[in-house]
Structure formats: C-alpha cells, structure tokens
Length: 519
Image 1 (tube, one colour):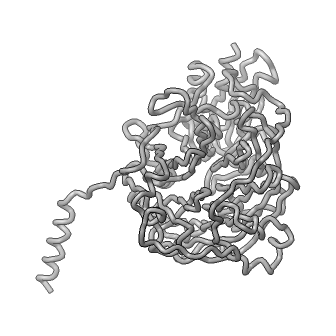
Image 2 (cartoon, helix red, strand yellow; image 1 turned 90 degrees about the vertical axis):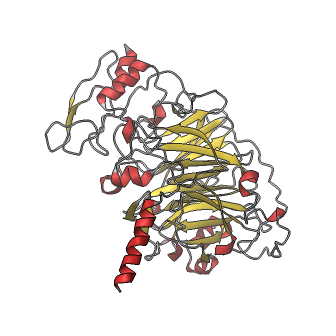
Image 3 (cartoon, helix red, strand yellow; image 1 turned 135 degrees about the horizontal axis):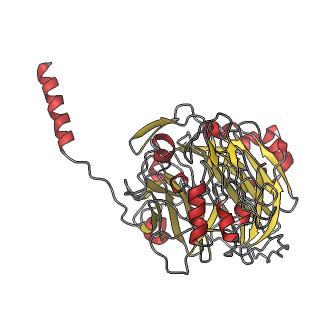
C-alpha cells in the first residue's frame, strides 16, 4: 500500500513538472483581435465625454454574435453591464484596418439608444442576414444579465434592408409568445420560394420554447416541446479552468438545412445543457395549427449523443449539408456532414485553440464559403470577472475557407474513397436535397425609414445615461432643450457615491457624452 502511494505521488509530481502544451489553431486564421472593444465615436471629444460620464466603459463590453454580408462584418455587444454605447455594430472588410478596428454602430448611433423602445435597439445577441439581403435582428429589450436582467422594452424583431440600410419592419412579439423566464439569444431565418415566404425561429433558452414569426402574415406563435428542455445530467461545465453549472439552459443553438424535395427545410437545434442534437421539419413549424397541436410531438426527432464535452451554443448549416457548430468545452469548432448518419463517429473537429478559441461564441459561413468564428472568453468575463484588459488579448475573430477546414476530416465525404453514403429518403426530416437548387428570389422593396439610415458622424439626439442595468434610464437629450448641456444627479436608490459600473446603490453625476458634440 505504501509503495502504491509513493508511486502515485511520483506520477503526480512528474505530471506537475511537465508543462501542458496548449493546442493552437492550425487552419483558422486570426483576422481581428482586441484587448478591449472600442467604437467609432463621432470625434475624440465625444469619446472622452462618454468615458468620463460612464456612457462608455470599455471593460464592460463583450462581443457575442457575428454575421457577414458583403463587406460588412457585424458584431453584437449585449448590454449586460453599464457603459455599452452600441449593441449592433459592424466592421468594414473593404477598408484596411488595424488588427483591432473600432466598431461602427449600425445603421447609426440613434438606432442603438438603450431603452428607446419605439425606434432603438437595446440588446441583441445573434443576428442573421438572409438571401434577400435583409438583416434580421431580435432586440431582447433587456439590460443586465442573470438576476440583474430587466426588460426595459418588449421583445421585438427588426429587419433591415442591407443594400439601403433602411428599416423594413419592426414587429413586437405578442404577450403569448414569451413567459416570465424567457431569454432569447439565438435566431434562424428560413427563406422559402420567395422573399415574402420567410419565417424567423427564435429559441427561448430559459422559457423552453420556440417562437415562430411569419414575414408574410406578420404574426407569431409559440411552439412547445420536451426536446427544448435541458438535460439534468449535462449542466456541469468546465471552461478556461472554471467549473460552473448552467443546468437551466434549454434550446439554444439552431441551424437550417437546404430546402428538401418536399419544399421544406430541417431545423436542427440543441439545448445548451445537453450533448444531443434534435431536428424537426419546418413543415411543422410553419403551420401554426400543426405546430400548436399535440399531434406534432412525434414529428420531432432525437438524434444520437454527440459525445462527452460537446455543449454548443451556435450552429450553421449551408447548402452543402455540413453542420458547423462551436464546442465551448473543447475550445474548438466541430462539424457533421448530413450525408452521413448522425453519431459520435461522424462528428469532426475542424480546429482547436486553447488560448484563442476559449469560448467560441458564434459560427457563421458567408456567401464565399468562408467560415467565421468569434471567441470572447465569456465565462471568464461573467463568472470570475478576471479578464486582463491591459495585457491580454480577450476577443478574437477567425476565418478560413470551408474547403480547407474540412479537408482530411470525417466531414469531407467527397474525398474519402471508402465512405458509403446512405440513399436519399425525402420522407425523413434529415434527408438532404442533392443537388441543391437555390430558389430565384425577387428583390424586397424597402420601406422608407424614419431616420437617416446611413451611419454618419452625427452625435445621437438622445442617449441612455444609466450606469446600472435597468435603473434610472434617462432618455432626454439635446433634442429636448437645444443648446443646453444637461447635468443632473442620478440617484439609484441606496445612496452612497460609487464609481462607474458599481452596483445598484450608486449615485453619480450624469453629463451626457453626446452633449459635447453639439457645442
């Protein structure tokens, strides 16, 4: 027994003495990186006023979602903490930037006003550009995160014309679409045979539902299913050396297949606290009567387990039928080719980086078949609050051609001589359409926007001043009293002066950062 203990101790000492080599990405190429985010303020004076008054607190800004359309790389920044000047932003890919470009509010500063429920966007997470050159944005209307979350505005869907940057439509979800626990951080957009034949699917992670919105009918409904719930055995996470529990997280990541022979797509989805994938034909979801009926239960499919440590929050499937998804436990990006059966053996790992890909928060593929990945170290930001904004790179965006990423993996079935593909069966929800023929889609006629749609150098006419999520939203500005610089003491209920970003008991002077630009 003593010899055994000595042997174990020796092995432990040997393991401790040998440094652990972190895996680095070999295929994905780093395109952009930031120690902390910055924004393209109208001028430096506006930026300094924002910094001074708490309108911009760099260390409170965390990028979460990305999308690529044309020369724009969109980046979303949710208002989890105070000091987030803009939630929907972009980087111009056609302009030569530094490695850490400033984010440009989209479509302008005015639209990104916190708490401006009628015309603004308070918080958005993951967004989607469709084949009709529209950008779909779900505004949660929330500020804060976890037990600090407050809905200052109702959940709304905003659709922009990406060619003109005009707002095409704003739709507010019905009360019946959400519940007291609703939290929506992901959407998928299903374009049918025409641009009017479009549906948006929004995953309610904590309310355990799926909200369906029809562009043509301009209405929405809610779908319930047991597959939207978390797996009680899969709520334990270890990321970046942090162990924590996200056991309440249900349906999250979603992806849509190409249109199948029956004219519908397959929606793939996965609860966050789960290692399983599920699927359902959009034929079920698009039909409100069918979707809300008990008969629809058996139309949902439960796929086999992906394997251990395969929690995922973001998914994308292109016309080639390859499902790409983030592997947040493994600091990696995975894949599955839908021409193969779904099993542990048919899941591939495209690339891994134990430093750069800590929490790959979003995955997208653009029109040029380039895969893009955002990583943001989210658990370190939320749980340990220990990001080093001075010396460490915290946020990264990677990209690589899909063909290069899948080469040599199980997902590259066209170049594997021994691969036996199953016969197509249009009767199942997973059957791909080979070859895929994209429908001819007419252009969407944009509606006139109520504001200047192009990002300009103008300072917004009004801005949120709350330094504390959900508290004391001041929505007045120079537009109310032109030429007057508002200066007020904002009391947050519990007294005691605190620094920007402090808790709900803070009180502070609130000189609006945009006021300097009007002088």
